[in-house]
Image (cartoon, rainbow, N blue to C red; front, side, top):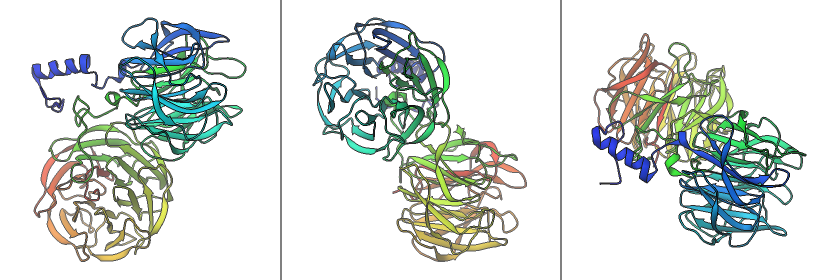
Length: 631
């Protein structure tokens, strides 16, 4: 039997039941976050503890007893694979113990660290756990590693960038682990290791405030670190995007200021467990939803108030099998549908009006006709007339109703709600976006006067947009697309309908240059592209039209007739494409439309029916992870 299964919504009958059941029971990589456990070991309750306690992360409620360590211990750190949790603390110092998540019971000896120490920081994926730093008579920068499936002494991995211990840990993706802050001197350093290599840590960025005792945990893409001693004890929660580099930003606050507890997570939810408030330990458990921002919510209580305990989970972000993913787009084995220029195939449309404002996001597979399905929701404060741009990994929604300066994003490889990215330089709606696979641009809009501003962002780094230059004509209700090197902005409205087309070179900065003219003065169209051709569909002239027109992006000149949509409509923003096929989704045709139709970009001719949106909408923002601007 092959290791690659068909899409779960296409498999059927006994074959499907048999293979999925086998996968869940023996292979263990079918998404199963609902059953993920957090197991906390030992800690300081006023004296050293040997208690091991269990939390079911997806629910709320108090922890329950799991078993005991062989000896009372504190200064713990822990990490988990799908099968095992491994812990190391102060007594006996440097000796590691393990538990099996599937069965309650006492811990057994696992093996020693390469150098005996306490206050280390563990990170892990499903194969290995890596221990960074710690303290023996002073802080250390040692990093060493163990393979979960074996027992024995750890081997050298390299060094941290600075000497420290008691920092934030359990911040993992399947490929990276992050160490955040710690003693001495209340460090604000964040550095990272790649699990696949050795040779030590690399600088990642800095915490909002330097401190020790951060409670860290993560999804596969985002790390969260709550509370710390700075030297005052704080409630701040920091967050970072694990796959990029950069400084932490504010996420929200814990229910109370505390430090030196520990964190555990599944793919959706982060728990902050116990800690120290000076002068006492607490039994508080808080939780947050990792994909959003906001303050923590009460979860329940630990079996005993403690700090300096170690936490491990079998559902954290370092475990590939627990990444949140759309089963309609991914196989049970975790093999991800390819993404990026030439291979990406996921289309998205979000927000708009129907006729009141929407925040829902829908998704579809561009190469296969059919109806859209649910993806998640936008932030509640922005959901109409946003522009959009995308990389192979992320789609950004640019501004919108208000007008707003909010930029929000989703990850193509996981269903879920949008998160805050940063702010545009100017609040505006009815913008247009395009970009390369590293840089995204946002042009024009209303603020409430018509804007000629072009902003840019770097997809991999959260933060505010930067000024790029100006359009040749200030306008809103324009459309934009292009190639991996050039962004073209077309049509729009400045009090009158426009036929202007102008362009910029994405990798540079500066003002736009005239490209040519559209077939007619047009606004509220949608634009999509292959690597060489840009196609615009529908709009108003001022009557609603079904005209599709195109340009060759690398040249300049006027647009040419391509064919007709299946239904004349204003398609504003509703677009998605891979390298060969373009989809126009939704719009307005005397009423809100749920129509999706498609074209083959390299040819000319009329559009063909693709399927339907869940919700008829106009003014939505669409993009894809395989469009022509992605190399």
